[in-house]
Every structure is written in structure tokens, then in C-alpha cells.
Length: 225
Image 1 (cartoon, rainbow, N blue to C red):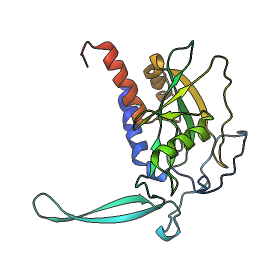
Image 2: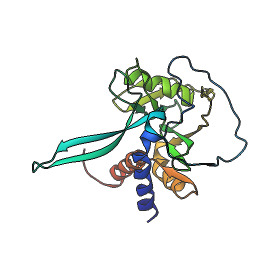
Image 3: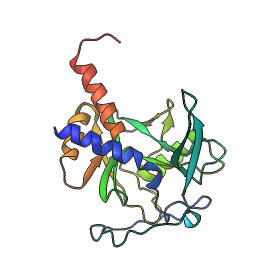
């Protein structure tokens, strides 16, 4: 029952993704990186209506269309204002960490998301700058949030090659970003996500559960792929 509940909350998280970018964290050209120390739990102090003309990151759209039986209909949607030439809003980096003497792992990030008033368990992600490709944004955002250099190996995955004795690199976080890094062996990924889902004020992103559940399904069943 816990996993079902968490999956529902994860879908809520995914629907809110267009609203998750804080107005103080995206600087399109030169970035000022800072290191901050958490001194308290985040607290929401006010929620109020935001006129569309004052919104910096998102806007509302009314979509008019004709359905399958010829009837005219409308649909309301939220859209980012920051979409660049790539035509893609954002990237999320599924990742594999390869170490000479340790099993393959993945790196997840934990951060507070005000629209949910919860900590989300995710893969690193971020918006694409106006003149960037999705691949360039993936490498840049991964470096900023985790400190690691990576290479893109597929549409949605990056790979990090670690050396024996490498120390954890320094993050390059912007003002207002507070991101905890956690390295999890792939063999433990599903069980660790279930543990996080049971913690108070924690929400696991649906795509992580889907990825981990797919690996678990493949391990526990005899289907040939």
C-alpha cells in the first residue's frame, strides 16, 4: 500500500514540475555560485495568487482544438516562458557512476520543493539556457548540482567515470539551492527508494521508481530481453 500511495504522490510531483523552479535560482548568463549551510527547516510563510503578467517562469495557455467527433473544445495548460532554441524546457539526468572497485551506482539528489512543501528524491535536473542544446545543459547541470563531470551516453542517461581514491567534488550551487547528494548502488536502488517514500515530508519522483522497479522486475523474472 505504501508504494501505491507514493506513486500517486510522485505523479502529483511530476504534474507540478513546470512550477518547481524558484524565481531566485536561474541566472541565464553568468552564474554566481555560493556555498551555504542549512540552519533550519524550510517554512512556507504565505501563498497568494500570482497575476500571469508578473510571473517570471511560467504562463497559462488556453488551447482550442477539435476532438475525434468534430466537437470544439478547450484545454488549460501551464507553459514555461524560458524555452530556448532547442525547443526543450529542461533536462533530467539519469546517471550511472562507474568505479574501479565498487559496484555500479547512481547519484540522486534531495532538495526542498515549495509547491509540495516536501523534500523530493530525484535525479539531477535543470532548465536549458536559451542558446544551449539539451546535451550541453545536461553536462552543465550535472556538474553544478553534483560536482561531477559526466558524458551523455543516451537520450536520458549520463555516465561518470570515477578513479580509485577520488574525493567527492564540490558542488556549484546557485543562491537558494540546497541540494543533498546520495550515491546508491544500483542493486539497492529500489529498496532505498521505498525507504525514502516512508519518510515524513519526502516524495520520490515517479521516474526513479519506474526505473528501479523495471530493474527489479527484470532481476526477479525470467523473461529474455
